[in-house]
Each structure stands twice: as structure tokens, then as C-alpha cells.
Image (cartoon, rainbow, N blue to C red; front, top):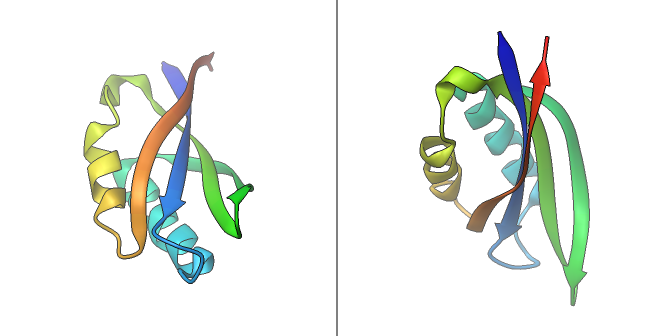
Length: 91
């Protein structure tokens, strides 16, 4: 069985949005989708705005992450979600 390692970049709506809440809600959505969290990084964007980069693995048979991206975009305080990296891992 092959897995893919996906990194999502999650942009909050503004500097006053709780990154802790966004991180927790996004982790829950990823785990419900069948993903296994690997790493969370904070990426400074500018003027106090910080994006979350969340890396997780999932079964490649799941296919696209479009459904997951839509679920995360629906979380309050999130402006945008984009896939910034996908790689295949065997194991």
C-alpha cells in the first residue's frame, strides 16, 4: 500500500484569529478524513499574519484532497487553504 505525504497551507482571515483554535479544528478534520498528522509549522507572512503549514500522510487511494480542503475552509476564521506539497511514500 502506498501513502502520500501532503502539506496544506492554511491562511487565517487576520491577525486576531486564534491559530490554536484553527490548528485544533484542522487536525480534527484531517484525522476524520483519514490523515495521520506528522508536523505543524507556523510561517510568518507579514504584518503579523502567520499561516499554518500542516503536514500529514494519507492512503493514496483516497485520491484528491478537495473534500478535505473544503471542510477546512468551512472552519471559522480561515480565509484560504491550498496544497503546497504532495509526495509519495511507500511503506
